[in-house]
Image (cartoon, rainbow, N blue to C red; front, side):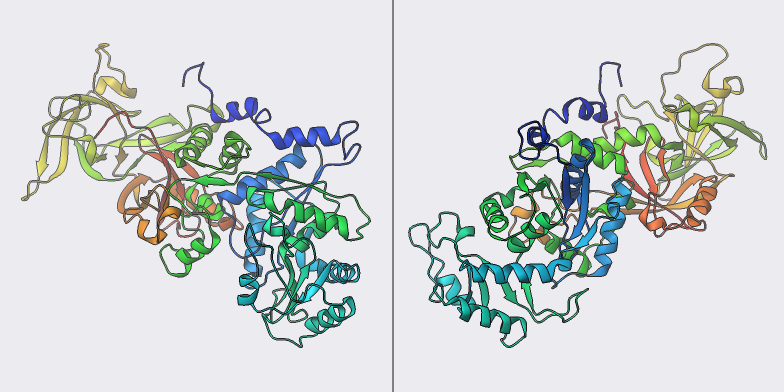
Length: 579
């Protein structure tokens, strides 16, 4: 990288705030004369615990916690568990783990939406008594038929039901006297509104289901549009930051907080565009289908856009936060290329990942003029970008492993790797000249032969001659171990799988390639032993390395053991040679 080029993190530091309209809105709100003058900025992150967080949630998460950080404010974590159908404690714990991994913390401000069920019920009673809510007995089919259209107001035969009658029916709904779907509580707003969210929306419905925290205490559950603004106001939230699909819901949000007697300030809702990335899906329903029907190995499959999947693949918290800063905060929905996320990871790992040599598709390399049984040691740096990461020792002997792609018996034009008569550098060791190869009966190359220059230790010839051949990585066959390496590609071959009639038809059959006979430096076994002893290794980043000339690879945080090393390709390196 030249001095004039900027890394992703440098670009974000310079431009993120300028492109963040939410930052500007909050600045105005807390300035003299603003609606929150003199108040502490207070946001919240309210995920529904019905699945694992994915990269799309991460944008919202970084905005909610990030805005609080920028203004020295507070951010609550609230589990939106008002819809118990798919919610589970497993997801609650996973969400907390992912947020901490990203470097954010909510302190003692952890809540559940279900903590407010009593308050929600009280405020619903209040609205009924004010004549602003009523019990509706229409069936779902009648409700849909009477919703109206742009030219026709909605209609409900129970809209003018007496207040006392609605109070009685609502109480009996709570007591479990009516079947599911037979009654709802609706707000009394405007059946002719051009915003259909204001056409007497449903605030409560009957559900006979076991809640993951409340058990069977409640059989009526508040809708998100009713519960959420109340929860925000009760927690003292100043800015309710949410994705763009809630923009049309903002009038309803404001209506709720303005018509219940919450003795606090009224939060301000601000919307931003959701994150879309090509070659993936963000819908929890679709991600759950991938998991439950076995198209992936689990929520943490490295091909998944979940944070636990990205972490297992080798993505760092810094790379994801840099990515969220880099894409900025806007009002227009767009689709970001997956390559931009990879750039952020490559930028981060280039600075922090130790280098090692690994041969993924090995072929024997025999140095014919090197003494049999002899071995010598070379000292190499672990990371040229960070000298503080020190050095390590590698060994060199007569028998090595070479990448099969680094040899051609009959080279194509501009091929500068190993072929008969060509001289190349073996990284950190010697100059060698290829003298030929050995083939099996089928004509496949099974061994490459070469001679080394004893006067070129370290890669520099004593006579100063120029070597046009490439510098190749290698592994000493006398001092290496086998490893399984998993190469990942996009889970979907179509850039926009959500646009397909069936997103499963877009699955990429080549999204995972497993290589079982890879050769890696023996020192990685010691790294695996240290990682094996780490507490909660599934919830943290495994050691990640740059396999020189190949890419960045993370030790698998589930399957890898000292006896069976497993590495996941996090991101490739740019390769100047076009195959």
